[in-house]
Length: 430
Length: 100
View 1 (cartoon, rainbow over the protein chains, first blue to last red):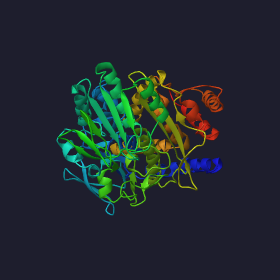
View 2 (cartoon, helix red, strand yellow):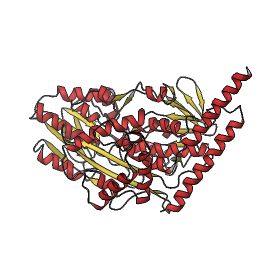
View 3 (tube, each protein chain N blue to C red):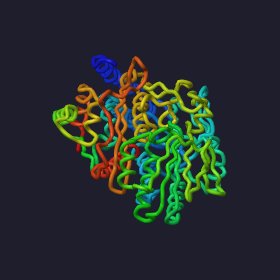
View 4 (cartoon, each protein chain N blue to C red):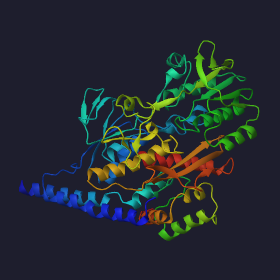
C-alpha cells in the first residue's frame, strides 16, 4: 500500500502543475475553453452518466463531453424490483438527462454506436455520423448470453418469458404477468452462475414478489432455482426473510442450473432433474460485457469481461478507451452494481482529466459499494464494502475488518434505501 | 472589434483560471466516494444526513467513534473501518468547505 507521504506529494503535484497549462492558455487567444480534448461516452447508465458529469465538473467544463445513448431518459435498475412487485411506478425510477445537458453542458446524441476504431480514435454511429475522440468511455452494461439457455431467445422475443435485467419495457411486462397470475400460481425465477449484474437483485426480486403475493395472492408460491451453491449476496438475511416473513411461500433450490425453457408448457429444464412448470417464468441467463465492448475486442477475459487498469479504468487492450461498470473484469469481492459503476466513473473521470492535462493520475484510488435490498415494502437490508487500490497487487482489495451486512431485517434501513436512490440519482444525473 | 476581441480573451482567461482551480484533488476524489449516499458535494435531500458544512473536527470524531465502536449505526461502522485516518481527514476537510 502506498504511503501517505507519497499520496500527498502526488496531490501537491497535481495542484501545482495543474495551474500551469491553464494559465499558459491565457497567453494565447487561440485556445478555446474546450481546448482540453474531446471525450465520447458510450452508454448513459450509472457509469456513463456519472463519468459525463464529473469529467465536465473536474475540468472546469474545459473538456468537451459527448454522450451517445439510445434512451429517452435514465431508467434505474436498482429499485425496479419494487415496480415488478407493484409498489413503485416506472416514473418513480426514471430521471431526465436534461441536467447533464443544460447544467453541465454535456453534448448528447440519441443514437447507438455501431463500431469503434481504436486506431483512428473514432466511433461510428447508427445515425451515420462519425465522432472523433481523445478519450473514449465505454459503459454499455451487460449482454445476455441467450445461447446458454435453450429456447430462451425465442420465448423472450415472443414476450412469453421475460428477463428484465435491464429496466424498461420488460419491467412493466413482468409486472403485468405477475399481476395477472392466478392466486395459487407459481412464480419461478432462476439465477445464473456468478458473476452477474447486481448479485442480490434476483433474490430481492423473488422476495418482493413474495411480499406482493402475501398481500394479494396468498396461495401463490415463489421458487428460486440457483445455478450457484448458495445465495450470492446477503445470504443469512434473505434466508431469514424467507423463513420469518414468507414461510411456506418461498422455496430456494441451490445447485440447479437452468439449461432450457419450454414456452409452450411453461417449464424450465435442468441438466438432470425433471422439468418444473410455473405460471410466470423469469429465467436470468449468464451475462457478458455489452455488445460494443465485445465487438471492439475489449472483452479479453474469458471472452466475457473487459480487463482494465484499475487506477484509470483504461482498457488493457486499447489505449485511450476506458471501460466502466458491469462490463469490467471485477477485482476481488467487487460487485457488478450501479453504485460501483458510479464509483468506477469517478475514478475514471479524475484519471481522464489528469491525463488530458498531462498530469500524473491518482496512485491510490478508493471505491466503495453500498447496496440496499428491500425484503418487504417496509424492511430493507444492506451490504457494504470499501475497496482500496493496492499498488503491489495492481487491484482493489477490501479492507480487513471493514464492510458487512445488516444486523437484521430493518425498518430504518428501508428509509435509507429510498434516500440512497434519491441521492445517487442526483449524484449521477443532476 | 478590437475591444470585442480583448473582452473575449479576458473571458477565456477567466475560464482558464476556473479550470485550474477545479482540477480534482485527492480530497475531492475521496469525498466523492461518499456522494452516492450523502448526496453530491455532501448535500443530501433525503433521510441520509448531509455532510456539507459540518466542521472537519466533528466528521473526524464521528468516524473515529464509528471505527472504535463507541458510536453505533447500521452501515457507517462498517464503512468507517475501510478508510485510513489520513483519508478521513482529507474527506472531512472537503465537506467542511462545502455549503450546506
